[in-house]
Image 1 (cartoon, rainbow, N blue to C red):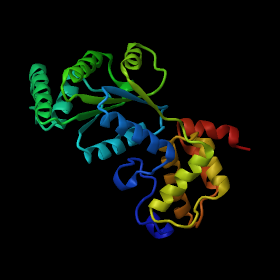
Image 2 (image 1 turned 180 degrees about the horizontal axis):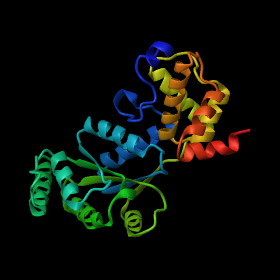
Image 3 (image 1 turned 180 degrees about the vertical axis):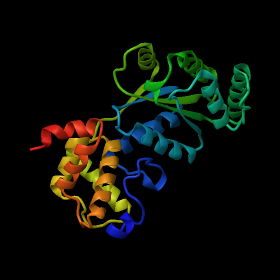
Length: 275
């Protein structure tokens, strides 16, 4: 429906942000470059810090794709709700070891150790990107710590990039700050960056002419506070509403109507803007 109404080649504002759907911004491009630098220099551990919705998952996916085209190997894992056994399974699988589902923890550790030795034998560096550290169970800390210690003792080494939200309470965050050699920080998009992000998303989808007017772009930033994940969701819904009403442009009124019906933070931010 959207392709026909607005002349898109494909759906814009894809929240996955992978492959062709990744939308470049100076802020995110710099962060990807710094992650690549950490891997290229074979540093032991770096952290990617950003508030909720700032694009950490999208950025890690982009970095993983770029690292995979380099001489280094790459393994991207989300720590959300993982147990120690599940983390070891995903890591072994990511290094091509095909672990059995019923493998014991000892077997999983052995598979990971064998895989690391195999990489060392071929002088192949490994980048391990861990997403969702703020949602990780405290029981994972000894496992992640041991993995990083193994990297320190390897002649080739591994680089760990760990993504988290800032200023989390508890020992996980304290340990991470002490362990990291470099911090890569993501901020939310400014009003001008939000407008540029929206326009770039439309252009990449095949739309050349402006689709959101200036008031609409300003409202998008006010409602989302510059969070790419919320920008994607709000703009997708606005385009669907505009297409349903057979409008050629998205104005401020469409966005306000949608935002009042949304649960969560976007709907809450709408209240001061009404009237």
